[in-house]
Image 1: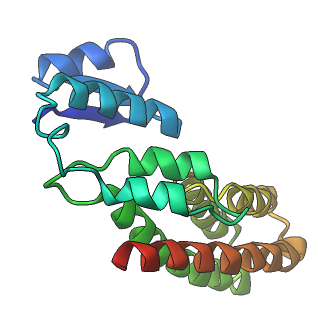
Image 2: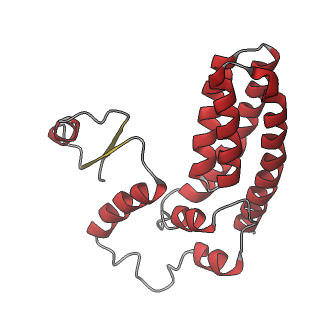
Image 3: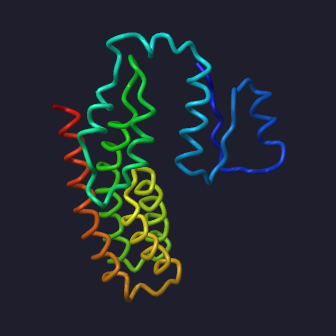
Length: 189
């Protein structure tokens, strides 16, 4: 099984140190979804693909991709990239990411409300940063943009307009949540 290092450091020599520790590859933050997909696909393609090409192993994702058109609140290309990570006999990263997003986003929204009530700009900035990143990872790009605006407000330290920005985040979140719940229902069917 290949081991890919993921680090927040992008210092010269980090890649070499990771490879010297018997890791197979290296990716540094910040990274974009296509970079992650590319590195994973590169290592998967090195493995014997005969099992994946055997008759009868067509992924259920193929049917979903062709039959499902995401609502405009989710980026279909990012969803396809996530679906492409599926491999027979392995846990489904697509369903796992969407499920984790639903769980964590609810927690982030609750924390954001608490941060605003406590006038905690630092806490709000940290929470919004996390929700912004996870929203982008699942293709909720409008959500990520709205959260980014709230993050900028938090970083400014002036939370007087934060409730208005938060209301816009919540509105988009409800659309995203319904869309993801719909995707997960189709997966379960």
